[in-house]
Image 1 (spheres, helix red, strand yellow):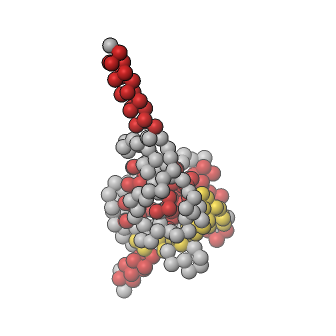
Image 2 (tube, rainbow, N blue to C red):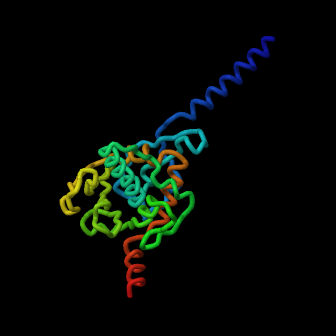
Image 3 (cartoon, rainbow, N blue to C red):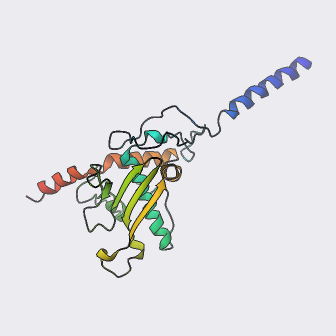
Length: 224
């Protein structure tokens, strides 16, 4: 009887030890690099912490090394944030998975993908430009500029510039309030790139949209 009790206590100790290793922790191990413009953003602070989880469920958090996020991916997360901020101003619900249609890569056309979904048509018109001609990268729809985002990764934060359509009212676009915000990269990751599903959708969307040069080339080819 005594041997059986000692054996059971040993099993419980092993189980407890395994469970301790499944919590949140800091990690210096690089995870698979998410898709983006190519090069890792060198400006992202190395002091940013990573959220980890032992669960493999799609609705649970997955390991993300913030230092491996590139410029394009951070911009797409920031774009979701700006849309949510304006939704809140209008009294609408926020959406932490705005690229949810992208279960696979759906390569964008320069005039947008007309699949019957208005929001997806809108998103598919977004183009990425990382040339930083004015010090900022951009996500643009090549329209009136109302839905465009300028962003610059600066250390552990990202600086944003955009027009606030939620307070435009009946005024012309030229009178839209200009917004300058600074947001933590880690907060963007925790909100929009934290679960397996969110990562899948963001990464697929990043692979789907055109670069500004690709958009310009297609536009010229279709307007000769």
